[in-house]
Every structure is written in C-alpha cells, then in structure tokens.
Image 1 (cartoon, rainbow over the protein chains, first blue to last red):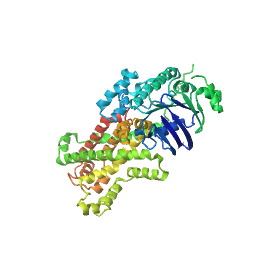
Image 2 (image 1 turned 180 degrees about the horizontal axis):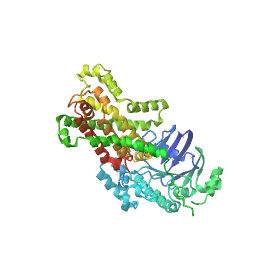
Image 3 (image 1 turned 45 degrees about the vertical axis):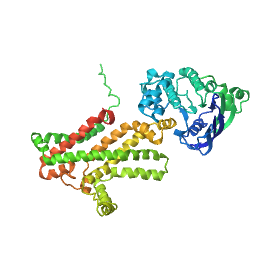
Image 4 (image 1 turned 90 degrees about the horizontal axis):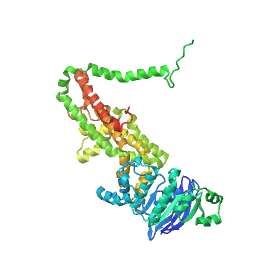
Length: 233
Length: 273
C-alpha cells in the first residue's frame, strides 16, 4: 500500500494532498493544467523537495530516502528515454546500475519480449514512434521492479489516433503490475480506463475524491462537472 | 517593347556589407597566405630537423596534451557546478561566472605575473611549497602546464556548460528513479549526453594551450628543452634566424589545422560547412 501525505511548493504554488492507494486499485489524480498534479507525483518520487509530509510504502517510510532508493517507478509524459542508449540498454538501465553490462542485457531480454520491443531493441530512442517510445519507457520503469508505479500524463504526448489503443494496452500492463499505481491525467477517458478511483486536484488542493460514477452523481465543483462532460479523446 | 527588368534576388547583401565582409575575410586569410608563400620550402626539411625545433615541438605537444587532460579532469566538474548554480543567489552565481570568465579576457602576461605572485618562491603559496616540500614551481615544465591550464580552462568549462544547459535534465531524474546514484547518473547519463561538448571543449583547450605565449614566458621563462615551447621558440628565432622562425610558425599552423580537420565533422558544429 502507498500512503502519501505531502505538502510541496513549486514555482510559488503550494500543493497539498493526502491519499492511500492499494495494489490492484489504481488511483487517478485528475485536474486542470497547472493544478500541481505533476508536482505531486515528483514529490512522491523524491524528485522535488517537499515542505512537509510523509510517503510510506507498506512498512517502509521512503520520504527520507533519495529517489534511487525509494523503488518508485515513473513513466514520464514524453518517455524521457536516454537518447544515447539503444532500446535494449534503456530497458537494461536499472539492472546495469547493479551489475555488469552483460548481465543487465540478459536481464532485459524477457522485458523486451513482453512489451513487443524485441525487433526494436537495437534502435536509438530517436528512431521510435511516440507509442513505441512510451512502451519502451514503461518496460524500462517496470524492469526495475518497483513497488509503486507513477504515470505522469502517459498519453498526452501521443497522437489522438494512437491514444485509444495505447490506453487499452497501458490498462492491461497496469493490471498486470503488482504494486500500487497512481496515474496523473486531465482526461476522464484515461481515468476511466486506467484507474479505479479518482482524486480531483484543483489549484493545489483536493476538491473531491471517489469513483467516477460517485463524482458524476454529485460533482463538487464546476471543473468536475466540465471534466465529466468531456467527450472521449 | 520594354526590357524586362530583372529583380534582385531576395535577401541580397547591401553593398557596404558585402564589401566590408570581403575586407574582413581578406584580413583573416592573407597573412596565412603570406606565411605559406614566403616559407623557405627548400630548406624546410633541414630547418625542421634541427635539435631546437624538435625539442620545442615535443615540449609543446607534451605540455598541451597534459594541460588538456588537466582541464578535462577539473573543467567538467566546474562546468557542472556552473550549470547547477542556477538555483544559487544571484551575487554568488555572478561571482562564480566572473571567476571563470576573467582568465578569458585577461591579458595572458597578467595571468603569468599573477601565477608568479601565487606560486613564485616568495609567492602566496610558493613560499610554503618551498619551505615544506622544497618544491619550486616557476621556470619548470610544470609551470608551462600550469600557465596553459590557466588560460585554457575557461574554454573547456564554457563548452561543456553550454552542452549541459541544452541537455534534458529530466533524463537525470529518470535515471535516479531507476536506481542510479548521483555518481552513476553523472557517469552513465550526464557525461555521455554532453560528450560532444566535452570533445569540442578539449579541442579548443588544446589549441589554446598550444599557442600559449604570454603567461608561459612570464611564469615559466624560456629554457631550451624545459620551457621553450613552439610559440616562444618561434618568437626568439625571429630575432636571429627568421627562416627558422617561419618554419616553426608553419609547424604550429600545421598542428592547428590537423586538429581542426581531425574533429571538425563530428564535434565542431561551428566549422562544419
């Protein structure tokens, strides 16, 4: 279980949120642009300093640890693959940090296969399509065998035509992943496909939480009403 | 029938701009043409085989190589510090940048005098070095290297800093979430990403060290085989044996052009056609 209760200031804006996520019941953090969703994720992963709060994974308090020791995987919105490494070496990166290049490449093989990347393994990230890059980034994150997976707007850099398929594929992988999952999005369709319940973040504050149909039954703010009425993108 | 007036091509240069650009170009190229045309080609073999010339060549290549290596080891970390200083208070950031820039704009002779006042026998640190370890720095081959590092280091630092600024910092964050320690992030992500900038900086550094004159002659003197590098040997020969001076100058020109050609395509975008 992931328990987070953090307060973080970024660019003069304060973001405050507390929530719990159990494995198998992914949480979507949804909100308008600039609400502080990505800052919240970065704070949980340890990528930005927090003002106050605590992050726990099961019995481990990780908020005092540097990011490399938290075992929290992150899927960034535009992949952020290492441009100088092949797809194989990107996926092997976490194993490479713990062992030899040869052992790391061997360990990457099953992940490449599982994510349909075997044929692309020798390509550089610059030679991939947006969907392929995102799949490689997911394989890279999950190959590190994290306890928690954070997805930051995983679909927003993809072409609209690709999103539908990628969303289904991503939902499948998130279901297979055994740990707690949080996905940040501004799209109702992403939240519906990937998550079990929703936390609405507006201007740094949580304005509503619950399942999507609970939100629909009693939207707390004008934003929630608009977001729920949005056509599927 | 009226003649069709041919329009001027869009973006044509105004004639004063074209004229002045041509003068500037001639000014850059003609001296080198003169050097090549008036060189004593017939005696070149004999001149270059002279003991003094070979000594200066070996000394110059050797010291410039060591100085470049020292600049790489010290300059890359300084560039990282400079690039990360973005979060520092403004006065501290400005002071840091100024400290790196000063050797770039300082007359090299001033640098040489400053080095003497620091490391000379009666210098700020030189006295201590002498008393504690019996080490005297000025007028040694080591002093040549120090003078070269002093003038060449900023070239490397700024080249690498530019590369760091244009690299995507989020790749470093991604590496951290994948279990990489700060040292591993530097070694496996940051350094490979800025490798082209490091290479370009090293080339600039080497050529600047190779041509160093003012700081070297002030701080290291001109002892044959010990501190008399190619530029110094060439300058001194000009008083006694102009043909030898020209041969030495040609040698320096050849080494500089060789370095440029060697690395131009991959690492020096400014020189690419």
